[in-house]
Image 1 (tube, rainbow, N blue to C red):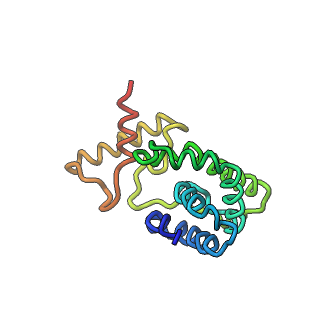
Image 2 (cartoon, rainbow, N blue to C red):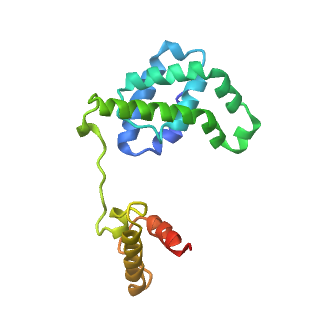
Image 3 (cartoon, helix red, strand yellow):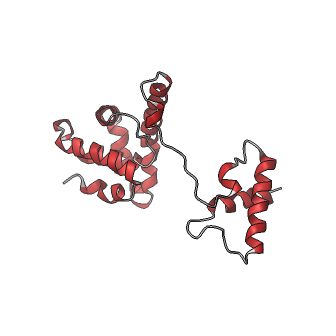
Length: 183
């Protein structure tokens, strides 16, 4: 029954994330420790699962989730039952953001300590044909970024505004153009 809280969000995740959180949800449904506050536990998980790293074992994430929910019970209930939540569900993040930080810190510590193998980390992939803006970072080298944005824009102008890719969005290029135009 409580799975209904999370089903829609779970279906929108990428396959690796959906598999991981599907396993977490399956284990949570069988866990007797959530009987008194299952709605709260699933609401927290729903809010954070798109940002949480997926490198911890499911049981460890569940322990962290239950501990966080118990320690922050009052703050979570206040945020969840606040009228602002009805109009702005993102307001729940004022409390659940701490859980994201907690899990990210734990995952980084485990990686540093060698408890998480680098082979289990996600791999960055590029689409073809790639744009120079895919592999350039505006904060690392602003000049290289400006050149990449200019090259991408030149391509677009030469091809009647058609992007090189048949699918996908040009969001990163648009962001880059906005940064380039700012004084």
